[in-house]
Length: 513
Image (cartoon, rainbow, N blue to C red; front, side, top):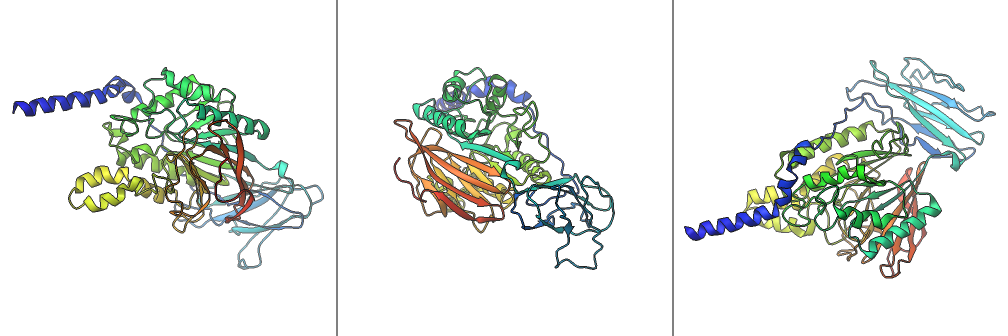
């Protein structure tokens, strides 16, 4: 009995030592703010291509059939032309395959707001008969309420269309020479190309996250690496940022709140909440605190906190997987539904698909394989531990809320760079792994998922250049010894055909820099 008491006492001491930061930070946990859940708008006017580069003589089909009424009520459509070139005679017309029995009643005018209750067509055509800009507006009505207006811009001039340049990299917070080299390379590229902001995909402070907003690690592992950059860094949390009993276990999510609070102490570190939306081009005077202020952006990016859904169980009730998944899922579902952005991205630390050592969600680090064999003998351990660290719950979350609903999903966790192709399960969604902001490791199974490009044991970053309905993806590698960098791969695709990727430069395999 005495021996048992001694063993229990020793275990308790080890446990308390591991939890020391938990108790020291508990007051912060009590005061942590909760994310406000969005309410879904109803009805919503929406079309895929709010902006497009067009050619003189092109016959543009505008399809708003994805407009929606959550109430299930039939929608009527009201269209008008707000602006067109001075000599243009363009008008909105109904395609030949639309039922002619419908009362279309389409009108066009230079600055006219049309008011009619006629059930107009969800699809119209516009002939580009003069060079210049064509601005069109759509409002849908469900018999009770009008939607917010949805505005279109089609132009023969690329310079008149919205453009956003985004850098993406993760797993950077080491304070190492490699991290500084990547930061310097980003600074050089963005000096030439005028980038808008950087996405940081988690594991921002290795190995166990910060202890307070005054922790010297913020200076050593973030600020010093990016002194040449004045861009906002929109960060998300990784498992190392929320370490509990051991580095990287992700079991103490209150620690992650320190990184949210650090925004007030930095000129570039930006994390307005644990999950939040960015609407770009950025607008307003407080873009770091309120980055979602553009009412009709070219691109909406949804920053997510994947750690509570993938890591060790947390003691604090609000971070328990069921509640956290529900709250973040409701917020994300409403945000995607309400967004009038042409492009929709989501990003988090943990991947959905990866050819790296961590692998695909549902079988991270091959835990899913072991769990399948052991679930018969340890059903509760399988449910509460094995399945969460295998990424099964995060895979289910992704399937429900993001699969086929976002154009691209970005993650880190694996310390390499991959651009993976859409698959049958998720339709149009592309997948990017950019976890080489300071560390590198091997691609473990290069053929696990089809890839446009992937590279083992290299550091670097992605750059996405989005103009209207076209996106060019550039992948830069950095030499960890010299800091030299090169453009390893560049390709472009259009939203009109997201599965057709045209290579501009580079091969799909990666040679040494």
